[in-house]
Amino acid sequence: MKDVAIFVIGCLLFHSSAGQFYLRGEVKDETNSFLPNVRILLHSSGYSYHSGSSGEFGIPVPQADDSITLSAEGFQTTTIHVDATQYQHITLKLLFHPPPAPKKRLLSLTKDLKGADWKGWTVGGETYSSLVENEFVPASRFPETGFAVNIDKASYSNVRRFLNMGSTIPPDAVRIEELLNYFNFGYTDPPRDSCFSIQSDLSECPWNPEDQLLFLKVCARKVDPAQIPPANLVFLVDVSGSMDMPNKLPLLKSAFTLLVNNLRPVDTVSIVVYGSAVGVWLTPTSGGDKKKIQKAIEDLSPGGPTPGEAGIRAAYRVAKSQFIKGGNNRVVLATDGDFNVGETSEDELEKLVSLHKQWGIYLTCLGVGMGNYKDSKLEVLAKKGNGNFAYLDDEREAEKVLVREFTQTVYAVADDAYLNISFNQSLVKSYRLIGFDNKVKMLSDSMNEVQGGEVGSGHSLLALFEIAPTDPDSIEQVDRNRLARVVLNYKLPHDSMARVSNFECPNQLTAFRDLQPCYRFATSIALFGGLLKRSRFTYQAGWKDAIEIAEKSRDPDDGMQQEFIGLIEKARKIYGRRGRKSH
Image (cartoon, rainbow, N blue to C red):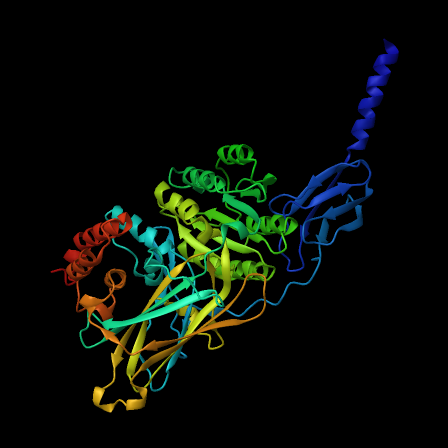
């Protein structure tokens, strides 16, 4: 019995002495940003540990002098000797140098406008970037303009959320190009030698009879289902305490569960979470193992702060570790955008995702919630991360974005797509691009360029220009037939070669009543957006005009168009008392 007691005491003394030192430190990258979830192998014991969400670590060690090996996806594995009596400051180097950060870019660009001081729209805790509405531009001085082609639709469902609540809408929450993107205005297959088809129509402008409307429809090629490349998807889910509301994390769980139904065995899904901790919730799993993925989604629960920067870094590391050459490598970020730990400014987050864009990893942003919803952050992340942006206000919208429009949302057919249009100065006195408005602070930088967009499979974009025509008597006979020349610039995914599609817009005016119904319906959407923005360019028209145009051109079998008419009616009631023309 005495021998047993001595043995036990000896073991206790041994274990006590083995853990008498505590190695503490922090891990950063070469930009001095903290690195979470770095694997730390302690050589003396053979045990592995990980740095926390703040990049710090604390490890019990049996001796003051020891050695550790640190490893993280995308970084060089490093082995160092350590002294447990000293706090460790460790820097990991990237496996390869990232490309230089790109310049800030614009949604559209015509001339060097002088920027004013930047202001962000806030509604409660919600934030929206302050925009400058595109002005009329004299074609004699600036005949050429350009804009980005993208599939973002977030503004429409966000506007719907405000109106369904009986609330007015911050003008900068209204992005007219995204209202138009929400609808399908008819699809035309591209020619065999191009990724895009381009069509145009010219008609009268309902809110200004002296002007004309030019419609440009751009349709992207549909992916052949038999040729869809394998996907490497990383769901980056905000599980912080701010997501503990029915219209946030529970809605996202339903959305991702719907998305999983579209996956194939050849696809890979990982889940990264950030909240009270940052980490890999689901290791890379085949899309064929739907029950495992759905169980992981169902087990998500909210709590803690919102270390969005650390979450984004962790998700991109996982995406790079599973990178599929020639495949669809994409991070799907789902959040209210309310980051409060680490880098939280839009400029710093923009730099972060811009670097990963160069590595061929796309970013889709799914916004949710109200009250603290940060539209301004998510819009920047999606546009700079070579991706797209949707706002989910209910389960119907989740089903639309992630099921019915799954290939359009998740599979890109073109990158860095932007359109240049050069107007015939003898026909066009001045013009303004409707929508595609730029942020105030971006216009202050004369070095900015148009930011091309990612275009999903089968997307149909419709852009509108309001045109003030020249005096008919001054038109030269030789120039009567061509209104404008269009050049669509783009690259194919995983291909650096620049490609173009060319089109000439004929000068053929169609009476508005004879215009295709889908174009007339699009006109009501543009007018609706102008009225919500309190635009001075649509001040001669009112809600009744928008309703009348929509009613006469709607497709009776299209429930989305009928819902839109209901939204105009709601807006008319909400805004009717505010002095706008609502006859």
